[in-house]
Length: 262
Image (cartoon, rainbow, N blue to C red; front, side):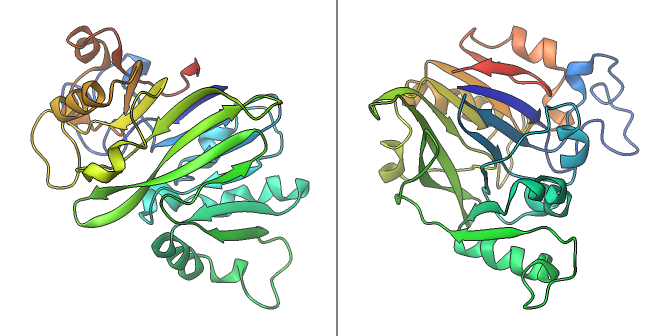
């Protein structure tokens, strides 16, 4: 199972418009962060996690192949604002999009022309599936377990994704969580002992709806993740190389375009 970080930044991206801070003026390409999204691929299956407003830019360098499903974490624009740009992939058939009830309703309101009875020719062909925490489903050779975390007082979805072999035995697992501030104790069992954890770390200072860097590190250690990659980071977190130098080797900031194997 391969994962490509299409974007690792927060809602404003990095550099932030009009900002001349230490991070935003960095010339290191690792400090250029588009809005959060990831592409997960096996020999059989290709999934996109979130489809934000930078999707077109993010997907252009990738091979043009069918996307088997899009997993939506929540209904904020930086995670759903690029849905109209999936239309080229509809030549492979309808795009299956999976979202919780809040995100599903938001998508119906954001893209009403995609769900009209008489659709305008050329609009994205979306098959919208409502999903719920703790109700697993399968796409190709990937088992997907939605779990719930809290984005301040908004419940949103994280995902535990497990690749299966021909006998449906697990080969590898990853957990993808973004925009989390807290997680209920009952959810912890769904994320423990994963091969790879991908989780948000917004900045050093406290924030009402996102984990800090220290909170993300403590969470990764608590669930015993073998390797952790930090995403959804703002310019306030600092420069990539300097932050990573301060972290344990098994917990590192990801960067746009990075490819990892689980």
